[in-house]
Length: 387
Image 1 (tube, rainbow, N blue to C red):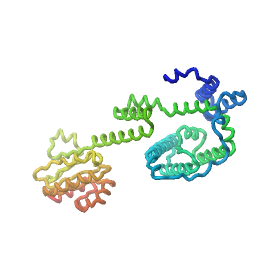
Image 2 (tube, rainbow, N blue to C red):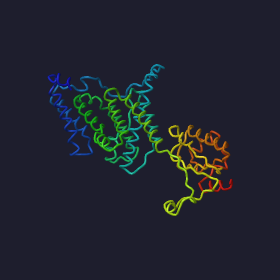
Image 3 (tube, helix red, strand yellow):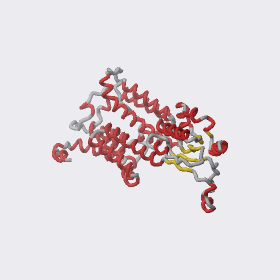
Image 4 (spheres, rainbow, N blue to C red):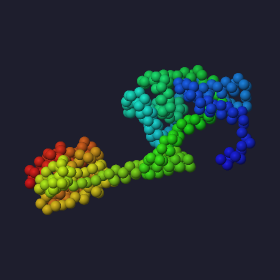
């Protein structure tokens, strides 16, 4: 702001006026028509003013750059190990951001037309298109929410709409590019200002500051500050790592192990509040696991109490959606403890992903296929047979 104040006398007023006209058109044109983009109207009007008014002091694209009609030159990039090392980090960041932006556009489109997109097809198509574009000197592109919404509002419903968009751009590239040299640079600046404003999502930002948990607000603000004072790549990398740690923290907080209460040990008042409890055999202790079995919470699953006269431990795992190697090691330690105490370990209702981890590691053979039961009733029956 200080630099702007110091150089206020360098303002070129005709250029500023053209930019303000283009900005006002983009702000107020949606009240006139929703079908024709305000940016297109701004380009046409300001180009006509500068061209027909012979305002040569206002710089246009043609004054600064040479624009030719036709396809760009096909070029195979010169790759080297040093270049790959230099570009690998920003390349992954751009790929992640592009994927998120495109999938978000798909979600917006689904909500507008009541359809369902194919995520894999969208990302594969985008990846192939960006790789081919790079061979012609292009930069990575994504699906844009604004263009997607405009497409849907104007009747687009199928991939044919996107194909027609591409064909239209190709025709402009081949035949109308010389006319782009007449567009005032200040008009493009005003378009970028509107794009930046629309992308800022300040209303969402304010809403999140008011409603979101403090941890999410911290990630949001830190990412914003890093973007402003460093660059987007650093901000995204740091923000993703911080968000991942917070996610692990939340997952470990909700993970828990609870011991079942024997129905026969409750009085009548307690039974009225626990009418869904099942009878547990006298030789059995039952624990139910809640949450994913992963390294952030695995240690909590080893705290099983050993009671005299119990020779069966049932772990009910219906609420365990996923498990990693740390969770598997916790189960193996539990099995070893059971074997030392002369107890049989029975696993109830093991979900698909944990079962696959156990099967691949050979844990099922260790615990015995007969001790993996499909539900708690079968587990209690198996435990009763071992009394």
